[in-house]
Image (tube, rainbow, N blue to C red; front, top):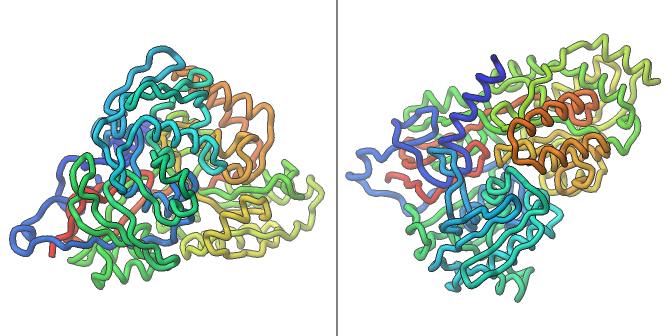
Amino acid sequence: MKKNLLRLVAATLALCTMMGMAACGSKDAGTTDGTTTTGDTASTGGYKDTLVWAQGADVTSLDPHQGKETPSVEVTCQIFDTLVTVDPETNEIVGQIAESWEQTDDLTYVFQIRQGIKFHDGSDLTAEDVKFSLERAINSAAVSYIVDFIDTVTVDGDYTVTVKTKEPYGPALRNLAIPFAAIVPKAVVEADEDAFILNPIGSGPYTFVEWKQGDHITLKAFDDYYAGKPQTENLTMRVIPEASQRSIALETGEVDLAYDLAVNDISRINENESTTVYEVPSLSCWYISLNMNKEPFNNPLVREALSYAIDRQTLVDTINAGSGEPADSIIAPGVFGYYSTGVREYNPEKAKELLAEAGYPNGFDCSLWVNDNQSRIEMCQAMQNMFQQVGVNVNLEVLEFGSYISRTTNGEHDMAYFGWTTSSGDADYTYYSLEHSSQQGAAGNRSFINDPEVDALVEEARSTSDEATREELYKELAIKLDSINNNLNIFYSSINVGASKKVEGFVMDANGYHNLDTVKVAQ
């Protein structure tokens, strides 16, 4: 019953938040569905020409086929569009670059491209750009996992594209709605890919202006955007790593939106007469990835012991101020394919017994990596202490975000703390990228698990469109992974954004990819 209720709540919220490409129905400022309304201030003072938002980390890449981390997509989703998107009111797939499409058989999708769409350089977007973009994404080590179900992409005229899949694939359209499947201009990328990466050109609502690394990014409204010019002329993203400083910047009016507030700041921001907080359950799980290529993490008894050593409920109640809930699976309850195996109990004595059985009666020394985000550091410090209680001496290492991603991709870590969002709302997105042996490294599998039974279950579940069959396979997979413990699932988070009460038209996105073309800020 609890599982079904959680899934229903998360799925309902996803109707108004997932993929955030359009605004939901109006609500009063401060409502939990994450919308704001146009207020009386509009008629008296007009609107600002610049919206400023703060986020905790800089982009890793402005190339949508490389920068898949949330801090990157928070920017690139303003610059690029995808073939299709998700209607936040109905949770149905609707066209974006594709005006319409038809599935002619189990393996074939025919897309009609919307005519008249312009790239930011003024060139027309055609079927050739779609074919080029999808094939480029397939060849990207960073994002191929969301599109490698595609076998061929064929151009059938200037505005018709045929996509054939390798086998039946249920989440095909939802994967094509993920921002990393963005459509880029073939001619521009082929002419000078390095220049494109530094000066991205898309067809989205905002054009790129400037990137001062580690400080800010500036975007400008695209006058010729197919869906109409955005509400605000300019966007500025500011990098403010400390959550407390993002809160202060919001309170002083330096920024209009502050992403990912510290949970301890939420009540203060809500009580401020000038600010409010929007918060909804996310599709994210926070977890520790154990590098199975290194000793002693190649020992299943050690991995199980570490899981028993973590008091997940206490972490949620204290470090996370009650926000979120303990996790039992790598996918959140609102994701299709979620199955509850039960949260692993906190049992330090059992952990010690398993360590002794594994040959480590006195524990061992290792490191735990985390990126330079204060709330994540505090979570890891608490777990460091829990591991210490069972004899495992953990050296906590804090890395700059870009270095953290590149070095864990290379497998240099012992243990590393991650958050993962199931962006498509379908279990395949996470199970394939985090658990399949072909996805080791950049694609997401940083535990370096290589288990034939896991691979077989992932492959079978993704190659059928029958939902009942897929749910049974994901149940079996969840049970299997619960015994492997390659990733120690910690908690499911909610997602929050602090906002000035002058902000209007903002819609929360369950993935954190908040689209800002409908947003304006009263003077």
